[in-house]
Image (tube, rainbow, N blue to C red):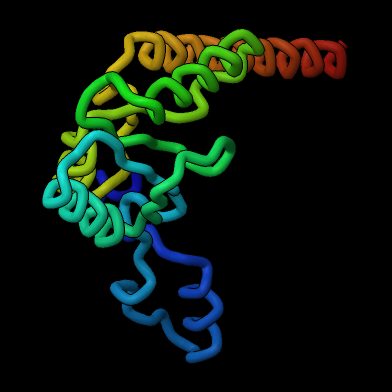
Length: 165
């Protein structure tokens, strides 16, 4: 949301360094890139495409990893919806869905990388997913979040009524 409003998203070091200098420092050296903090693997691409994707992931602040490690990799950029890495990600996602845990690894098309670059922000992987279940899980997670928010609101209102009585 901040990027959409033209506000920089910076690392916490910007605050401490600005305080140490007694003035707000320029944010450019502290800005977070769109894929910062993400571990991303790639599969099914030829050497040139793979190299270009690895460079783009790095330029956007992500970390490329050649291995697909459960609990580490958040996105798998796949040339097609097939192969050992894709099957492993689907298996992990199926296990997570059975536990209502959502998607563990978003299996996305390479267009996701370019879209994040163009938007200069992290875009939801579901929009670029190879699998409809990712989209369903995202919708389910959104619905659960709305239900939890409504329950918190109701609890808060009930509490206020009890205090007022």
